[in-house]
Image 1: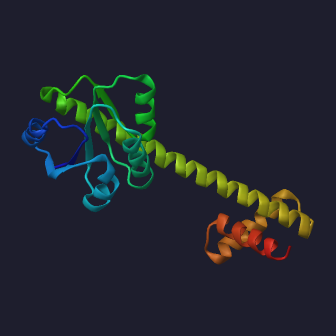
Image 2 (image 1 turned 180 degrees about the vertical axis):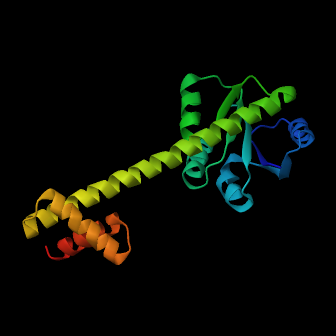
Length: 191
């Protein structure tokens, strides 16, 4: 059962939305929140999905979403009356998963939520894979730097420097990148 946090900065009642979500089987967090309190509320209550109902997303709302995206990313659905293309791009950049214009039809809510959740999950996998690739690249650069240091200091060929790194890693029972890190740190200390 997904936990949903409703956020509004309008005066219109959103009881129909809350009721529709409850009928669909979502666990509705108590009350609604304003965009100014969004980050704190997300940290405290850890909702699975955030739905924002707004006339037009304010700069404050987008800033709160950007902070949340960096520290506690969640799928965010935004229902707005503002179809400004730049505002939509800004909202998506700030972390909005789905931006819908012209109000909310409660009968369309379930498929919209499912698409937003699927898109968020796919983006999360991409972010995770990107982080892995960036880490692998950083490790390769570190290993290359350590190899160059060994080649310069011990006058080794590249394959011999790599073999030296591998042997040390095996002897210490650590990853090759860790041995490379040790060699680079030692070299930096001696500068």
